[in-house]
Length: 268
Image (cartoon, rainbow, N blue to C red; front, side):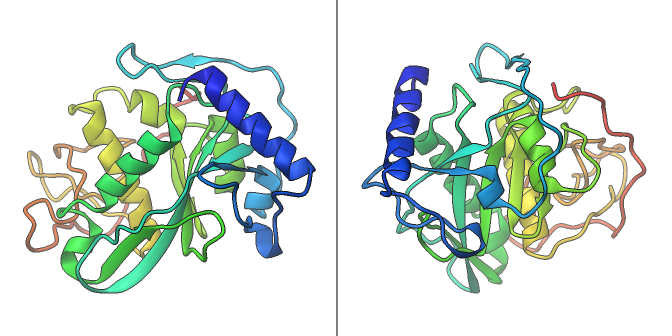
């Protein structure tokens, strides 16, 4: 969505909210959005994590030219929730419903295109639904959901994730699956795979945490990295891999554990 169109949509939804057309109910779950449009809600309504000190000065981070994504370090904490879908990924297993929300300050990521990318990743036959334990479905902002996937600016990532702020990684915190837009736009240095592969990894890894998966280690030099290895911080001799079932058959995993890798400074 072009920047001006998104701002207009956000303003229209905000006007409805002020006028009583949009509200939030118990535990910060929003009620129905305007027909065929996004819903705007404050980050304070989306999470119980207290916000950090106010940071108003925006620092725009420019993505590679082909990505055409820009964003401030500190966003507004206002979200566009996308409409749901009838698609259900996976033939069997427990149904897990998820919402999708994009912070309104992010330019160059259309809500519809982003939601489609998330559904495609989570519905891939090499993903979490391949083992028959899980089915996944995107729902709308007024529907009951098991988790929400946020595309957040670095400072909002820190609010939603809780713990020690780093503005660099993505995370899962309770029912929040938080994708740092800096990583969505720029991936990480020396990852060794295209941006699309890194995006598949970050979505699958953080969703894996919501499905009860812990961190894993590289099983050996030159082998595929388990999707639950912290590939953002280092591959430790493995090669990038974004899937738990990379061959569509038996689940691929490594030894349980995590490395003591330093987290890079900043939010680029």
